Length: 178
Image 1 (cartoon, rainbow, N blue to C red):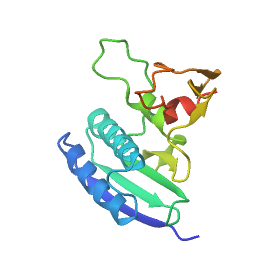
Image 2: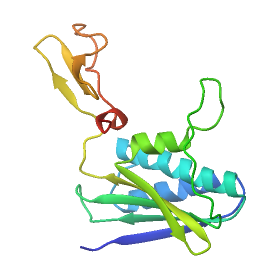
Image 3: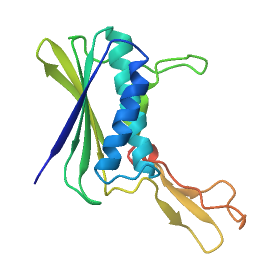
């Protein structure tokens, strides 16, 4: 299997996060992931969170890497952000009014897998998204009502029976929670 790897050096300035998003979006398009696909938006959000964490919490430059497993619909996209800090990432649980502390919670909910490992004097945080995994899963309960398969099984969807609405969909974050 061929793996395409691209990388970008990111400066220790929070303004670099926007540059990293633009760069990543162009590399996704080059790998065959259309800009308007939900997968592209998920990956850009993951990249934004990981790069922001590296730049804001370490104050050091970082390296963003994207690895594309195989071309076409199948395969995995791996995102890695390496920084010079040896401090492990700390997943926090933000309160309702907190303005920060949700980054790794988002990564945990959106990625199929994620983790971190030491790299040189610092660390590398990574996440993976399977290209062929559905981002949403709609499960019909009966002809009139749509159901949602969530962490506790099938339940009625909001607005069930209202034929003027689209079916409710379960985001990847709920689909992967057990």
